[in-house]
Length: 109
Length: 114
Image (cartoon, one colour):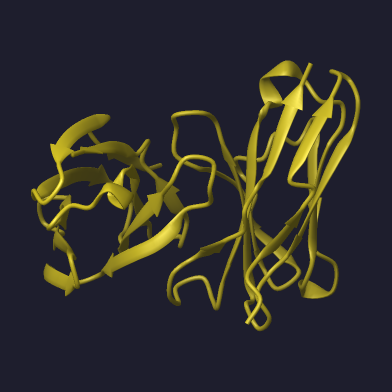
């Protein structure tokens, strides 16, 4: 099975930087995804890491360390529309994609 | 290009009644997933299809849940009979393949069991 752990909630100010962490334990590894989910909406894809290192995409960056079972999502220049839940998901050796509980980010003016 | 389409968006039923959800994946996507999401939780995989074959259904409660994907395109998820604890959002997603790219999610079907 898979075990994916994320902190539950954080509050940050508009324009700030936040880092959302994700640790995982899995049998085999075929990639890690970050999704954004606004309240009442479906998850939307943000980033994908399969090799160690940092992937940058605009204001969002994602880092992966496979040896440590660790990833983080970095959100820069926070905007009000970034208030959402951020889900970490890991694809295991059987290609099962399991999600963590999500981290709720609240952006305040 | 159309995204993943699900229906109905909302469904309210009494316990012990049956309910069915329908999903049309993105054209050309061979892999289809059904997830269940409870409030404040991440999506939980129920079943994954590769074309018309259910390759991962170990987390599907088979006593009351069933699913099918005829002709490897559309899929239906059924619950019979529904229980109070089945109230959740049922999300359908699709991807090009089991290891290819990201999952694209539909808007979900919100089920309330009274």
